[in-house]
Image (cartoon, rainbow, N blue to C red; front, side, top):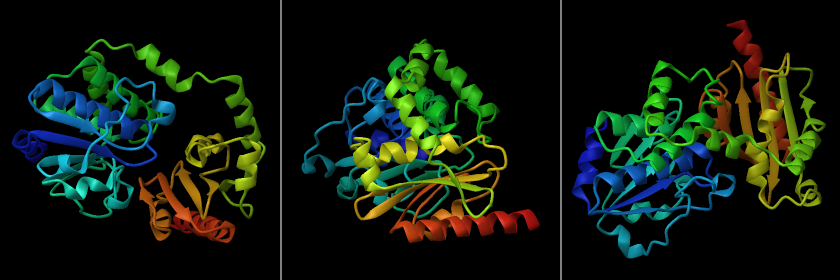
Length: 317
């Protein structure tokens, strides 16, 4: 599966590792893990990580990004992890690289690298990086394994989502065999301070049901974010979407968060393929977990109506 990728890695003395911007655990875990694996197995190569800040995932060892001059790309391989479109890549300079490769588990949107490895059967890009190391019989450093495990846990919903398979647990076992501190990872991921608990309570009170349907949503304005002293709307958009999960009678939920001239939309579903609706609004992702940007509140309401209609048509099938 990864023969072309390992050939490309062997060919270039410089490997620059990218992922999508505004990273989640899977994006960072796959990036850090892949970089660690290449560094451990090819000590003569220069390996860089590039992108925006790690945010709440800065506890992952190796989450600091590198300062990379434009000239470094000229004779380099750029490897892009966990990214379905070129627009979302954490550093657009990948187009300057001598060669490019992509490893991704999202629903296919476009081809934009020389080597494309896209497999939606994986629960995470981190799972694909773990399989890359196992398949190619590469050394797996403990810190790289910990980073990969972190992304696997977050993208599988602690192994609850239906993308979790026997292979997921097999790869998790493979990672755990390196001996990293699993409890430490879970503490960093899920221990919350009182402020965040109270903030979640605020968002629970904001939940609304669209037109008596199975679709729930939260809409947060710029003014509300300022009142809550929130500096990063993306942290609210993705961080609060699942306060609406596990509500009886709710099959689809969306978190809308205003950000300047656009509204971030995070879409989730327990049973429907909502990806076509996300794609309609210029987004994408997985069948049951997607993201998109809409123009304003009116567009947000149009998206909710599309999701309501999707649920109705799906029940008829």
